[in-house]
Length: 296
Image (cartoon, rainbow, N blue to C red; front, side, top):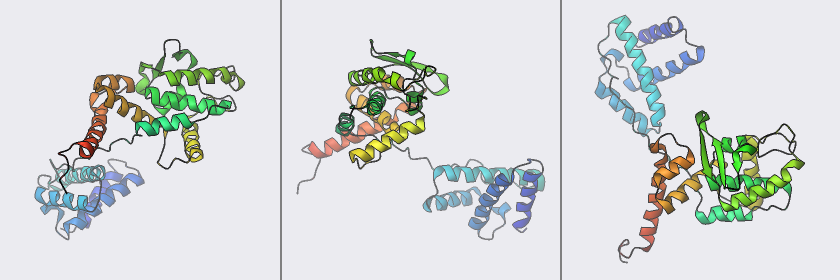
């Protein structure tokens, strides 16, 4: 059996029964062409689970990410399912084959000194600089997402009690503490805000034209300050959120408290910060413990 016949049959299935778009058909075609290439001329109905596992290892060796390999395996499963149904092929060799485990990407965080250096260096000698300082103080103080910063309303701030009510993902609300430096920065900005805000604007942070500040604008403002302050390392609002979580966890070791602060639905999402905490511990151990290093 030539390879072309099964592939053509599967494409007809996609176009007819599935009514898949041209883009989807092309994507499946590329994934199945990869299967044919890896099979090196063998009939696809003769491949075994051992063959497929070998293909997975070869793809990983060539640098394909686990998510890409997972998508390819999904296409292969769909192909063998239709071949069994329509052409009487045997059991799918892809059944039970999983992609390599994803290596969790640790969120980037500033050091405590870098975070304080940035926030202390931000000026507040003119209104919009004062606004920007308040944004970034709040992001670091309370671990807010950039979307939460942009959507924060005046009525959700309680500076007298150093609290803010935040609406996060899925419309879920939570109350977070606001640090003293952030409270002072917000007080200064709120005194200046009427110079810019329109009467209909209820968000805390507004732009020069009086409209609510967008998430894109917040990203752009931090990028501009990074350039003006001569900061070399990459800097973006979410990095301030990561830094808040990492520094709080390093100090308190209270994972549940950090989960509540960040608004994570699952504790597993927050646990990534324990890896950052461990990295800091390991670095300090290697540097200072008298038995950590081999003698010269």
